Image 1 (tube, one colour):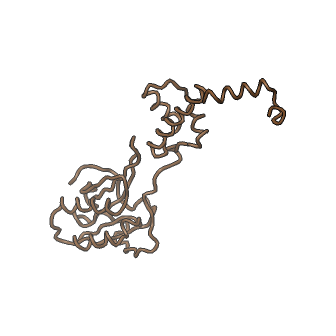
Image 2 (cartoon, rainbow, N blue to C red):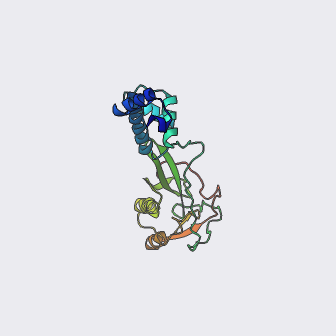
Image 3 (cartoon, rainbow, N blue to C red):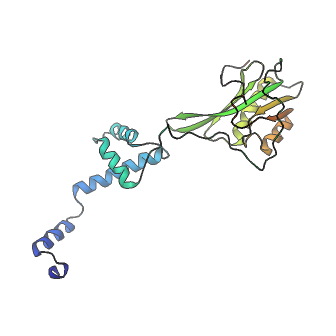
Length: 222
């Protein structure tokens, strides 16, 4: 066997002895660390890099260096997402949905309350991932009159925010223009039905236009 493998007899027996003894202590430690690193990375939805995972490991009593954590991530093909290079996209256009006309033309203040409401979605970074906030503001007072927050930005999020505004304002004497950007939530059939049932007329401005809503000042209701 040794001649066939072209190894020395002493080397062969040394190798067989190490195999019979099972994995080394260092290999066991490396496997244990890899499992913990992978678990923390998965728990962060793939966001955490070596510094955050290192902090979690040390909080759990591990004595480990950042270099060791980074090496573990490389071995497993794991990488974090830098907040400087990633942020959610809140305006996703549905090219097949009918788009309401722009009834506002950037004139958000009609001089009276409950004539024009504006709405948009923004995102909030938390320790448990991204949350999405939809706010509804009165174009005249620029005050928030409805809002909703959740871990998704489906049409249900927008409907919940508008429903709060409707409940806060009570029965509307005149039809209110609900203005937003071209995001698929605002052009959806679901929101169209809700608007029709609550005396709201949808209006849509240009996507990516900084003036789609008059302000992101989330001040109290008025």
